[in-house]
Amino acid sequence: MARVEILAPAASRLRLVAPRESVHRPRSRTEVAARRNLTMLIGATAFLTAGGLIMVLSASSVSAYAQYGSSFLFFQRQAAYAVMGAAALVVTSRMRYEAWQRLAVPLLGFTAVLLALVLHPTAGIEAYGSSRWISLGPVTIQPSELAKLALAVFAATVLARKWSRVDEPAHFALPLLPVTALVCGMVIVQPDLGTAVILAGSVFLLVFAAGVRLRYLAAAGIVGGAIGFALIMGEGYRRARFLSFLHPWADAKNTGYQLIQSLIALGSGGWFGVGLGTSRQKWMYVPNAHTDFIFSILGEELGLIGEIVVLLAFGVLIYAGIRIAARAPDVFGRLLASGIVSWFGLQIVVNLGAVTGLLPITGVPLPMLSYGGSSLVVSLAAVGILVNIGKAGRPASPIARAGRTP
Image (tube, rainbow, N blue to C red; front, top):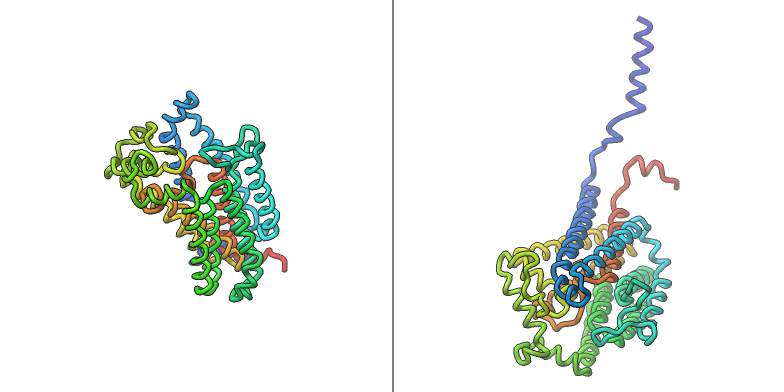
């Protein structure tokens, strides 16, 4: 009888020391929402990247064989860039996003040096009338793609540090306005007005997200629009592109040719497309079929249903990014996520607008779908930053909180 009395307290002590409820606790709504956001973000990114590889193979097979004797050349390069981008995503997702505040100025300075090297005749590579690339042995990089991330990080850092005085335009505009103008100017002289529009527009949307008064934003928008219109009308080829966007059939064999061929590709797809790999327009009819106009080939081969699926994936990506920004634990995280989402969203709208004839042709790639190593690697690295912000916004478990040191 005495032995029973000794064992009973021991059993009760075991129940107190190892409660299973603390290990398998139910998740809170906030944690479930954070996990859902990360799942949507990573899922949409993986889907778009994999779909981009398939479409690059299909859209580039004819031109790659005609120029280089191999239908798989661009696909193999894009696959290698996808691996590099995935590695960059893993690295940035494991970096504490607060570290980007310390890296903002060095990253922007490094990017400015690369943008300057592009303009040097011995360093820059000229193609299609522009000097936008630098050759580093077997790898070719486009510094203006890195500028999108660098400027988003820099703008978020400036606005976060001047958060308490964001209502004073003269205060937060320095050094944000001159730095943005300098970076955009270096991109314009390449010349690459489309990317400059993405850079300036992303900063504008980020400033809007920071809560700057609308009258200041309206004034900046009017001045920026006037400068952009002057740049368009001041160059003959830009003016021709703008006018062809308004009336593409007026010069169907010259300035309106690319847009008309894109519309033919989109219209030929119907509901379900002509079949993957069986596009007719990729046979040298649509210029830049595997880069800026890859959505045209996608629409022809996969039809309206395929286009809707891709648009939904982009919508999930942007929605998840907005949710992550809204749940960020601090001002810098919220602004950095907003800057990245603004960059993605604006670039998607500009590319699709050009492909469908709703906007002038600007030569801007479609994120994660278009061929381009620099664009893919930088975009995936930016997604990794969003992942880290999303993780930081998720509440820690009671066990993890108990293990933290004050």
